[in-house]
Image (cartoon, rainbow, N blue to C red):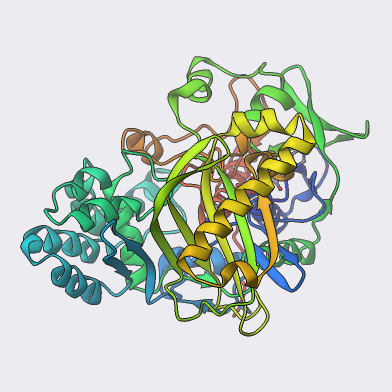
Length: 506
Ligand SMILES: Cc1cc2nc3c(=O)[nH]c(=O)nc-3n(C[C@H](O)[C@H](O)[C@H](O)COP(=O)(O)OP(=O)(O)OC[C@H]3O[C@@H](n4cnc5c(N)ncnc54)[C@H](O)[C@@H]3O)c2cc1C
């Protein structure tokens, strides 16, 4: 082995960049190969004629400086120059009767609003808000990988304050809880809190998210998603790491059941001591390694044991209209259902970014709508580029028509239209079936996710590791960045070298 272990990383998404940063901190010689021309993967935004459309982060977590988990951002050193917008209201959900359920982030204000809307539901409302207050104590350490018995004991101690609320809420789903309200707006509206949540979305994730919002631990980083990725890239480069863009990996090279290099799409071969895939899990296991290093458990996971998160359409509009007096996200029912692609929709959810002056010219608004989509349909359409383009135009037209009915004059104010499909997500990031956040979080799979979780190595293959959202279920930037830290810690342990996270001085 070289003096500095040579680490080859597939993918410059936030997980690959984070792993690169921790690798450089720990004396590795890391090189990242990224198929796109930019860092970030899903954590991205794009500029169109004066507007910036964001493809991911609506809120980033663990932002409170005195939280233990904030250590991750300290170590990565990426949020120093980033201002955060904390929402007063996260979203507004309109019922079919036109009444509005405001999801305020301040738990006392939320409680008062809910009691006002549904005085007959006082007992359930107070149970709900007490649950949020219980999860305010949730402050997990950044390091949840116990290397030895001492670390395990420390971790256990850290978990004590959240044990009771976890046990109390573990079995509940958001949908079941919402059905306990007598008031139809709460029964209908609360399950819409997380767009694309599966039917058995765990209630405790709803409560802990609201607790984070209340405590200003979660907020929107001004500038949007791409600057986060660029900050990670800058930090990685400043530590001496190397990244090659437009460098798609075609195959992981293996000899005697040990990974030793990569074959790139242009035919180049590169060798290294350790290979880390921070790319899509399915393509890593079944394409880059040809499905040779799996077992029954892993195959079952990919064949339906776990559910990938939904595939989505993103319709982005630049409009010469000021949405700054509107709630940041409005989920509203349509007068008549519409067909977008091959799926029927009864509601739309529109987001604006007027709280971030970098997203649109003054007095104008960047709007985005994330809409559930059928990957197979869009993949099939892509085979006929003209039809695919026509269908995208049709989706945009229907969305604009619906928004125009709601915001009269909007049609005439539209300056930019941009539609991304599940195939766009797949093409730019490699994510399996265009899934927007790795695996879906379900109550049924909670114990698996909170327990052993997905394996970070593959059976029978030495010198190879995986990280990112496909091995760290939860599908968010913090978890993917944290998985960069965890995997380098694992690699250090396997190599018998100490893991040293270098804390950046503020
Ligand atoms: C619509 C949407 C909303 C979201 N909202 C939030 C939010 O509010 N808060 C939050 O924290 N997170 C949010 N997320 C999730 C978050 O963006 C992702 O979980 C996170 O960015 C995933 O990072 P990753 O590095 O694990 O994976 P990816 O971003 O998928 O990165 C994988 C990288 O590998 C590259 N790659 C793949 N295959 C190859 C190959 N063969 N060769 C070379 N390179 C390859 C890809 O191009 C990509 O750059 C959202 C995501 C979406 C799409």
